[in-house]
Length: 316
Ligand SMILES: Nc1ncnc2c1ncn2[C@@H]1O[C@H](COP(=O)(O)OP(=O)(O)O)[C@@H](O)[C@H]1O
Ligand SMILES: [Mg+2]
Image (tube, rainbow, N blue to C red; front, side):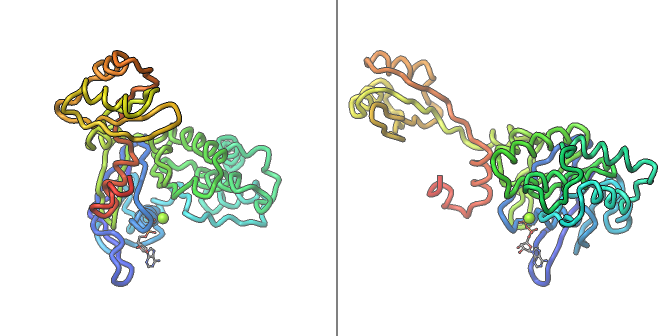
C-alpha cells in the first residue's frame, strides 16, 4: 500500500531525511515513532503529497507521490500535526465542504458524511460550530475529515497529542476501529498506544530508520531485565538470606518501603528460576509479596535507540 525508497529531504542545508526506506502492506497499522525532530512529520507530508522529497521515491497504492499527487491524495486521509479546522463552520457544513473539495460526488456525499460522523462519534455535535467543541471533539472532527472520502490509507500525525487521558482513550479506540478498515500510519509519543493499537513499529531517529518490526520483535532484541522480587521483612535480613541461597547472583535493592523491600536479580546465563527465588524467600521465613520476570518494554527500546550513548543508563 505504501512504498518508500531511500527518501531524502533537506530544508536548506539541514538534512531532515537521510534516505529512509520502508513498505506498508494493506491492513497494517504502523506506529511511527521517534523523538521530536526525527523526521516523522516530514515523511508524512511527503507521503501525502504536501511536500516534495529532495531524493528517493515514495508511492501510495501504486501512485507516485510526486508524479501523481492528486491520485495519491484521493487514496489518503491525512490528519496533520495541527489540524486546520475552520473554526467558524458547523461540523456538518465543514464535512460537506471537505467532501466537496475531495471530489466526493454530491449524490454520495450525504452517506459518506453520515458514515464519517457515525464512525467518529460526532452525531451529537454535527450542528455545533467547531470553535465550541472540546479538543477531543475537534480531534474527532479532524479524523472525520480524514476519512470522509473513504480513503484506503490513513496518515495520522500525533492524533492524541494535547488530549486529556479520557480523550486519549476515546481517540485511541476510534483509531483501533479505523484500523480494522484502513491501512494506517500513525505517529505518537504515547508508547502504550502503540503496544495496543499498532501491528508494527518503525522508529526514526535523526532522519534515519533505526528499527522496524513488531512490538514483540523489537522488545525481544533488548536484554531481559531479570526478576523483580518484593518481600515483606527487614531488608538486611532478607538480602542476607537471598545472597546465601542464591550464591553468585547479582542481587540489588531497588526500592524500600515501610514493611517491604523490592529486590532486582539481574538476568544472566546462570540466572535463577522463579521457583528458586520463591523457595529462598519462603524458606528464610519471609512473605513473598510479588515475583515478576521483567522484560524490555517499548520504552526501553525507544530510549536505547534514540538517546545519546551513555545516557541510557543514567536516565533509566
Ligand atoms: N519547514 C521547515 N523548515 C526548516 N526545517 C524544518 C522544517 N520542517 C521541519 N524541519 C526540520 O526537519 C527536522 C525534522 O522535522 P519533523 O519532520 O517535523 O520531525 P518530527 O515530526 O519527527 O518531530 C527537524 O530538525 C526540523 O527542525
Ligand atoms: Mg512532527
